[in-house]
Length: 81
Image (tube, rainbow, N blue to C red):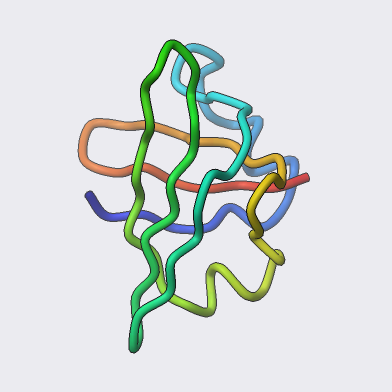
């Protein structure tokens, strides 16, 4: 999956409510240029998004932090308040 970081609350709220999940970050695992961010969406399910390392660093994504998994047909976006 591709992903982008939504950097502000207004942008996150533009998405349909049924496609936005506000949950906890389980793991932001950074590689050389790309990170895999895992979010626990409940019910034993984990969503994983591939984003740039900068998209992890800029909003300060960390284990236990709140984030949105914003899902659309071809992408999952991660957002923070």
